[in-house]
Length: 305
Image (cartoon, rainbow, N blue to C red; front, side):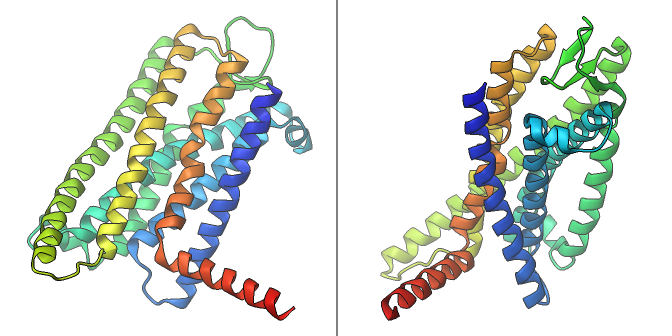
């Protein structure tokens, strides 16, 4: 387990630094421009969600951090596990929203969704409020059924500190059905958006080939670059989510959490939160230009010294 913790904290450290940088960059950019891009607002929110999620999971895995919270043990477990569950659900819903925003952004004027372009920022804020309300309420059962770890036989040990108590079968089916429907909806919307963006990229590719045949050098448009980024993020998310849900389903069905399985699951769950800011940073020309200017400045200072 120690090796899992070392790898996990290294992974979480990279993710936290990348999300802090991405969040800070967009906050500074928002103060400099009067109308921030809708996709930047969504990216900023996703970075904040992932930052909270990584801090919360580090908290639950660290003995020192758990002991440093001056709350009763059961309250610690309820608070941290609730935050982790809510932020994971917000991660999938915000990624779905990101894909929808990108589809609206690249859609031509003849497309039905293009009517939302002019007030897209306002719609995004409303969508944020709805998603937060949905996820805070749908995961409220975690507060009720989370307890401190003990030797009781009817507990599902989430980690060495916290457990989930068994619930009524009807309530369990109700919450599982709601959760599955919610996840299926967001995944389905992402797949539909992915199909549209693939069609857009194919159309753009044909146009680029035509310009190339006419000896005109085509440039990669910001819309195409952003579409590639969103498609890559959704692919990473779906792969990691499928692995995570497989591990969770098996563990829940057996009503047993092995420490090794828990360690692997913790790593898998946070891959997307760690990788997504790195993808955004590497695909944003503004950030690349800023980093290049910083590197050039440091080189010039070394030469002068």
